[in-house]
Image 1: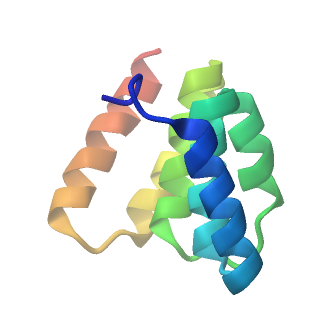
Image 2 (image 1 turned 135 degrees about the vertical axis):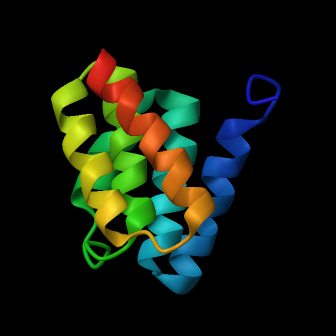
Length: 106
């Protein structure tokens, strides 16, 4: 489970991978791991510093999830709407639509 996961180690490993690759997607995954280890606000701060992912639906989906977790529901709605504009997979579209409904209902 997520609670049983060694998130600090995953954060460290993504830090090493980032140092080797510099990939924005690796940086996004690192931010997700940080959010799990240190809380959603810390992860969101890292996500908000990323560049080069404005056309990547998972960037926006991550912003939506982290904003829900910190109680910023209007920000979450906007992020999920952006993700839905970019997603091409039907399964991911269904998931994002459900998460958008959660953000709107809060």
